[in-house]
Length: 357
Image (tube, rainbow, N blue to C red):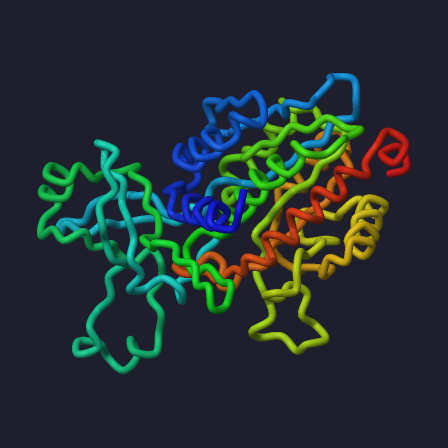
């Protein structure tokens, strides 16, 4: 896959609609790309799998993971005015939401544009100007004037999913993408590129890759994929929030252009220490820039895979600025370095090394 093909891959995943529970589009993209790498399938939860062509069935099994969903919303009810009352799917905060563009999938499967509505400042009291409304008080405006029009003409009602409305762009001058949902669509792209690179490698392990559903609402898909795959070791790609725009340099643990981040812990997960150190050593040996992180918030699929029989698992984080908001920045070189690290780790894994974990 050359640079232009990689850029197109990232754009496709970023532009795909896939709120938790509604991941059909990213699952289909993964399936289309990966059929040449192995046996693919999509289950009823929309978890997508690729059983690698080179597998023998008698070697240790590596699960490569990324989650295909992104934070979004779901329609709770339609107000008399035609505005939509909604609830979040995943972790969002009110300060990041007003005036954002969104797409609402109606009952016919069409995505229609909308805006998270705001009161014009002309009508705000002094107190309102200094306060962010609660999510329960927000609405989405899809351009209608009545409840009947929203429900009957637009076919939007309770249960319809809502995603951010952003088209991904790549900027050559700074090697950056500006788009939506890089948590974790950039991880999805990394899984595809890893499988493509592994085709040219001689391995001592078998590989099954999976894009898991519903991570943003409790790591639900990864609990299912781990049981189905039954791995001996797990490698998770995750779009990880950058802290390089607000932390002092000595405390930055995920920075744009600083390469992959190996996550030691967060509120859900502690990496297998031996596997973590092994991966750090591989990155150093290959000259891959990387960081380590200890996080006091967040959760990752590494937890769900670890909880399945104590599988040794690491998380390779790809830096993302402004996660869980309308627009995200990522750097192409960080994606490439993350893939290099995963490939380098898998190339060196064998039965004896796994037993040392």
